[in-house]
Structure formats: structure tokens, C-alpha cells
Amino acid sequence: MSPNTKCTSVIKNDHSSESCLKSSHCDNQKQIKSSNNSGNLCAISNKRSIQQTDSQLVQTVPTPHNATQTNETLNGTSSLSMKLGQEKPKENPTYSELGIITEKPKRQDLALKQKRLESFHNWPEDHHLKREDLVDAGFYYAGYGDCARCFYCSGGLRNWEIGDDVWVEHARWFPKCAYVRQQMGQIFIQAVQDLNKTHDKIPFSIVKEKIAAPFWSLHYETKSNPLKRDPAVKTLIECQFLEKDVLEVAEKVKKDLLLEKLKLFRKSRDSNATQEHQSSDSHNSKQIQEQIRDLKEKNVQLREQMLCKICMDSQVEVVFLPCGHLVSCKDCALALKDCPVCRKYVKGMIRTFLG
Image (cartoon, rainbow, N blue to C red):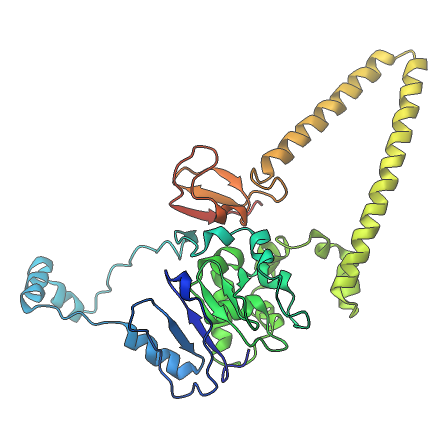
């Protein structure tokens, strides 16, 4: 996504006029806010312009003279303390800094991936970006060109270029998006923003290099296909084999091995059943079988506890606030307004990582 030919738009509370804006001469433009107060913004890619316009959007509220006097009177020695070089007390961390998501999606009806995927039925067939990748990054199809829009922050991107990464561009243009913060973490957003100061193109690999390896392994590899952590798979990928092909073969091998082990287990079970009838110590054998059965049942119960109660597929990852229930995966949580356990309104959520 070329910084010199790309404009992005953020639309707030106005779904009837969703559109992605584009300009081929953005160097001298400033951010434009529509007069009807709908919140349509065109974020200019020129870094200097972005910094300037951000400051221009902040309105300075004049402070009355008597308010200044009252403040000084209440604080007493505040001016003297500043002169003496005493540090101001540290402010409490914000919800964002604590990783707590309090923002609500602009299009909650598109919170589920399947709903967003359905919007891509008219997506250009010859486009280099896969609709599944865009959906994972929170985008749905705006309905024209290659314009995609985030269901959470309503930020729109278009004119995707070869080499653009959906997550990187999302974090690059909309760093305050709560969906990116929840899915990828603030450290990912900060890494992209730091690289944006020196790079026009930001490959995903550079972001990965910038983030510490242990943190990356814990937060990102665990959220993707677990087979990626397999030593054999890692070795093949390092040998320049395509990751997609390696994972596809690994999945097939995994299924074949599971079928083979299942056949061996059934054969062994049938053999043990025959031996149990012929054995003199059948009582002890039954006790062992009961213990195994109990262990299996407990294992199933533990797995069910860790499964998302909405999709019954992914693991639970999000704690709802203020009730504190851990019952949903990170994707299904975004589609819920109330906790499915206690029915309390969800005021915030925070992602968890099981050690």
C-alpha cells in the first residue's frame, strides 16, 4: 500500500455513507473533516502531514484567569514545587495500557468471521489478497473495487499493493483500533508505528524481527496453527519450502497417524478384553480399566472447560468485565453484548494467555 498514493478513511457512526477515499497527490493535503459532522476523515500518508494534522485536530480550550488562580490556591506550593524540580506524580495507567478493551465494534453484526466472509462474494477473483486473510484481520468488503473496511473501527483501505500485509497495514493506518490491539497486542502496533517512521514498505517479517522472539512465540505462534511449532515443520519451512504446502502435508500425515493409532488402540482393546476373560486376576484388570476410564472422563471435562461456549471449537481466551467470566474465544467475544453465563452487560474485556 503505497504511502504516496494511498488515502484511508475513518467513518464513525455513519454506516449509510461508507466509502474509501483516494488521492494521488497527498503530499500537501491536510486532513479533511466533512461539514455534516459525520466524522469522515482522509488520513494522509505523508508522515509530516499526519503529525501536523493530528495536532490541528486537538482543540485548545482557553482557561479562565480565575480558574488558574483557584488551581494555584488549591495546590498551594505547586508552582514552587515545579521550580524546585520535583517530579509530578505518575498518572494511573489507562485501560488501553492495561490491555482492557472497552470500545464496541462499529458493525457488531459483522463481528463473526463467517459474516464478514459472506460480504466478499463479489471480491475480485484475480486479486492478490485472499479474502480469508482480510477477514482474519477484521475487514469486510465495502462492495466496490478492492476497498475493505474494518468492522470494529470502520477504517477503510483500498488499492492494495503486492507485498502489503493485512495486519501490518491495519496497524499502520489505524493504530487505535481495538480489534488489532486485542488480536495482535499493543507491542505489535508499536512496532509497526516505529517502522513506519523509516520504512515506506513494512513486510511482516521485519515486524517479527523487531518483536522479541520469546514474546512472539508466546503470543502469536500459539494463536495460529499448532503444527507450525512442530520441529519437523519448522525445519522444512527453513529449507525454503512453502509454509502452506508444508502445513497441508503435515495435516494429512497427522490424520493418517491418528487413524493408524486408533486402529492399533481398538485392536489392543479387543485383545485386552479377550485376555481379561481368560485371566485369573480379572478383578485387578477391571480396576485399572475403571481408572483409565475416569482419567479419560476428567480429560474430556477439562477440554470442555477450555472450549469456547459459543463456537465450541476454539479455546477460551477472553475475560469479560466486570463479571470476570472466562467463557469465550477472542473472536466470539466481539459479537457478545452480555456475558452468556450471568447475562451482565460486558463493559470491557481483556485477553488472557494460559501458561
